[in-house]
Length: 220
Image (cartoon, rainbow, N blue to C red; front, side, top):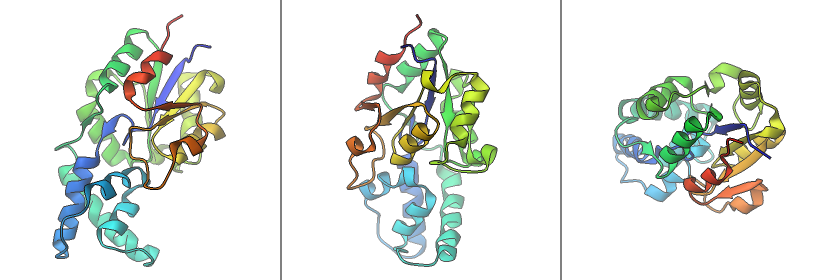
C-alpha cells in the first residue's frame, strides 16, 4: 500500500538538536558552579523535553514540580540564545525530504517543541524544503502522546490515517501514532532514552538510519 502522508517528529528525527542542548545545559550548570555534563546523558533526554534536561542538569530528581519548572524556564532562556549554532539535519534526511517533494508526497512536522523554538529552528534549518505544515502543542493545546496534533495533520492534509505514517524517536511518538490509527515508525538513530528498547515500542517500522525511510516513498 502506498503511504500518502509522512509526518515526522522534529528533535531526534529530522534534526540533530542535541549539540545545542548540550551547550545550554553546560551554561546552566556553569551558572551553579557545576562541572561539564555528560553528552550521552543530555542526548538521550532531548526528546523527553526541557524539564528532563533541567532535572539532569541541576540534579533535581525528586524536587517539586514548581522548582523544576523554574529551572526549565531558565534552561529554555539559555537555549534560545544558542539553538541555531550547532543544530543540523541528520545525515540522510535531506535525501528523504527531497524525494518526498520530488514525488509530490505529502509530509509535515508534528513536535512537542513550543512554536517559539520550533518555528525559528525549522525556518533556519529546513526552510529550503517548503514544509507543508508544522504542528506544535500551541496549535492543539496538548502534547504527545495525545494524538491531537496527528489528527490535526490528517485533517490539514486530507489524508486517511491508514495511508499515513508518523515517525519519531520516542515511545510517546509511537503511542500517539497508534492512538491516531496511523502507521508508526521508530527513528532508532535518534535520542532513545537510556535503558529503553525501540523494539518494545511495537512500531510498524524501525529505521536504523534515515535513508531507510526512502524505501517507503512511492509515487504510484
